[in-house]
Image (cartoon, rainbow, N blue to C red; front, side, top):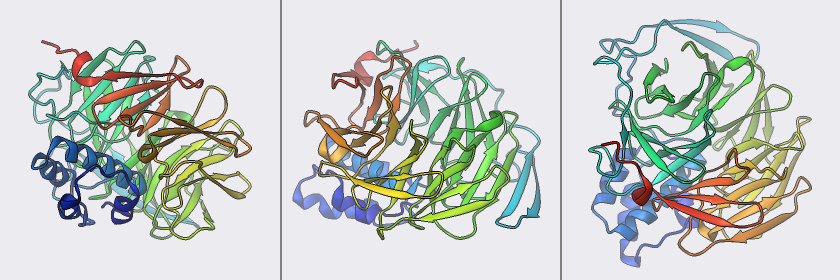
Length: 420
């Protein structure tokens, strides 16, 4: 489900010629469209149009938190080898579905480490488009690819290696886990994946069918938390693969997720137009936003202890204190903010692809825009061990940006290891 996609097409960067508008509309008009369908549309268009579609899709995904492949069968279904026992309980604020996953999803073939692969790999996409990015437990940056079943690693010097994953899925958002591994959501396979630093990958099926696992983050007590955009649930998964789902009080399309300084889980709800706070036992507080249709997207805990989030509908950045006070700040650029992170300087940094810009926001709300060249489209962003900001570009590059405004780009096609 690409919630808000029709709105974001009008605000996102669109390099396509005027007569291609109907083509883009066909690719993005269906709210229940699939990643596979979008990619197939892209293959029929020119390279320039594919780039535009990728960027628009990134913006749409930020508003919705995920894109579902509803045709894909849940890996935990009968006959797939996954063993799931589900129990239910009811709390005062929300109903809780505790799913005890007795084992990780059993692979159809013996598990083997994913092999590093470069541009010549059979699974390498014809048009590499890095998607989400995160700091890894090994000190490197790791990223997923738009519509691709592999995960990439880029060292701080810019060397790139790809790791092919098992079939039947498309990794989306990812985060470093407590166990020297990367954990990621896979909405296509309706599962959570784990990629070891040695390339071995494991999966845990999400109990709720077509739940749309979206953003994921490491929380207190070594557990990971993720949003279920289509299922209107927040879920917790232990390093051993036990998933507990918390059903939200009402529909809202949860997307971005963060852990607050109060050890609560905060997440955005684009359809609900609010920020929610959940205790570790599932109690929910809701904080409505002032502006209708603000489309809160991604969220991060700032150095000031507040929760900062993007608003794709208003082109603003919002701040929520743990006391529940909401503030909004208009960015000094023409475009919708996509992703948000905290920099080494204690400020919040936001990407604005349409404006080819990265914005810095101080704890007091003062914004400064850093304009990049017209070929640079900063998308998802994270801070690295080198105290630089790393971001993905849907045109096949990874960018490294210092807080003083110095940009270095690394091409995925020219620097990737072949593994052969």
